[in-house]
Structure formats: C-alpha cells, structure tokens
Image 1 (cartoon, helix red, strand yellow):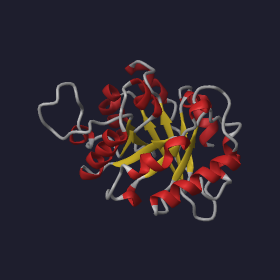
Image 2 (image 1 turned 90 degrees about the vertical axis):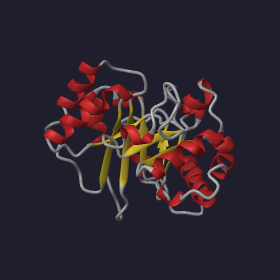
Image 3 (image 1 turned 90 degrees about the horizontal axis):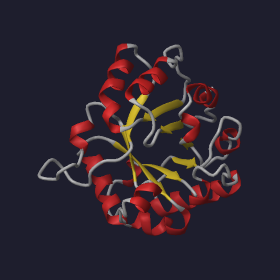
Amino acid sequence: MSQAGKIIYLVANWKSHKTLAEALSWLETMKGWRGTEGMKVIVCPPLPYLRSMHQVIVRYSMPIELGTQDISPYPFGAYTGAVSAGMVKEFVTYAIVGHSERRRYFHETDQEVANKVGQCLENGLRPILCIDEPYLESQIYALSDLSKEKLVVAYEPLAAIGSGNPDTPEHAQSVAERVKAAMQADVPVLYGGSVTAENIQPYLNMPAIAGALVGGASLDPESWKALIS
C-alpha cells in the first residue's frame, strides 16, 4: 500500500466492543501476518485488554503496535478513575485523543484535548489527534506551542462515522492539506469514517493522506486482514 516512500498508518479503533476472550481470539487470527514494508498497523482495543494483548504481541513478535483509545489530561495524582499516560506507556505507542465521540458524549473541550496531547508527549506516546472539519483550525490552535510535528492527525467527518457514507477522497485530500497548513508541519493525516477494504485505496492514493482510522471494519479479523492486505 505504501507509495513513493509514504508510510501508511492503519489504525483499528475498537471503541467499546469485545470481551477479553474475543480480543485475544482476534489477535490469534493475526499470528500468520508478517507485516508489509512501509505500513504501520496499530490496534486500539478497550483499555483493560492492553496488557494481555501486549504480552501476546511480544511473545509472537507480531508486527502490530498498540494504542489506547483515550488518556487522562492529568499526570499521576489524586484523579479518581483517570488513567494517566505513565500508567500505559509500557504497553502502547500511540494514544487516540479528541475523538468526536469523546467530545460529544463526554463534553471534552479543545483545551482538555490539548492537555491530553501534552501528557502523551511528556510520556513518549505519539498522539493520534482526531479533528473534524468545521472546527479544524480552532482544535489545532488549542495545541498552542506543543510539538505538533510529533502528532498523527485523523480527519473524521461526523456524518461519515458509522453511517456507511464516507467522505470523497478528493474532499478528504483538501482537508488534509488544510490540516498541514494549520499545523505548519508535514504531519501524517489519516482519513476516518466508514472505511472498508473496498473503499480504502482511493484515499491512500491521495498524496496528503497517510492512512486510515478504522472503526467497524476493524472488529472482524477477516475484514481487517482484507483491508490491510
């Protein structure tokens, strides 16, 4: 899938799906996959499964990295129920921050998301910052003087998430160009929103798009393997 030296990021966001047994079964089906040059495969399972999945990945030297679906905007301390970046950095390389579902259902502000980005960077995690088009510039502006070049950005149009109606590759390309301009950095920009094995390639053919953030199509191991192949 990689082209002209471009690294492709394929991120599976499982959201609040699967039991631990189902998560490990999914991983079992991936043991025969040996990876593809120029491609990073990142799986973001529910937080309680990170340690168990990390153990399997290490044991079998699987070419898969783990990410957490969210992170606390605070460090270690008296923050009941919060999971800080320092608690999970042993198991994950990436952290999704600012997903539209977090902004919508948990009322996260741009500043809270920026604080999460800061916590990721302080602990050596690479944030996958989710943005949507109407508020693109303000969501990026909230990052202030954080090291934006270390981020991955995922553009997810709200109308496309889980709807089966993805954005067009051409419009996603134009948004990716806006992201890079607002960031003032050549960050990887992913497209997310009703991505499948059948429709992913046109997005990857766009020069400013470096991969995809995948929800529903990542839950079934066979559809995921079809997508990454």
